[in-house]
Image 1 (cartoon, rainbow, N blue to C red):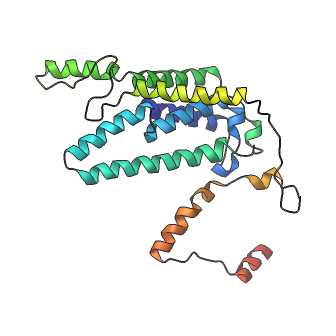
Image 2 (tube, rainbow, N blue to C red):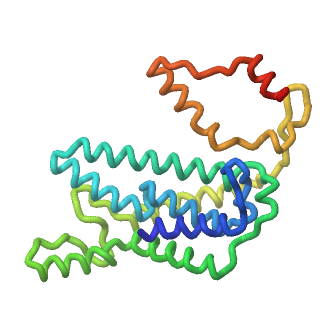
Length: 248
């Protein structure tokens, strides 16, 4: 629920500034709204269940409960829903926040603090629960004990209960340490930034407007695979019909 609220607030920040009819009108928005982009990426990745973010822990418990109970189709369906969620998040992130800066996005600015504060508060709560799942599991265990139920095995600083013994704090520390080592190697290697321009094989510069990837283009490869599996040929418009349409 915290992650969905954060995503709704991000969408509100964008719609409050841009009156758009299509997602393709945005692009490069991450340069204008870096904090909003960071919140969206964190909330979206967590909602899709990417470790070690907090959404992964809750989904992991659902997967384990489904498979241990013999409900394999439900477990596989939950896994597929996470993949579809990830695809939707990446589509919006790439089309709206990444790529070349569009004309509409160039006029936008970062959201005001009155809108950033609730998003950052939700992200902070999600990080706390993700690193220390006992913040929610320990009170739940007390409620289960009071109701005469078998309480979930949880501690304030421990990981998730179950056969996986997944500890998000340990994984986060390991990933941060690995990232820090990579950053130090990059800084100490003396690498320099080199600006390069995109051009054709003949040396002709390609304008930035042509480098924008529309939202529909992200699913061209899966669409071709589905059509190939169904043996369905894409509809091709008649050139003469298209020319007559342009004439009118």
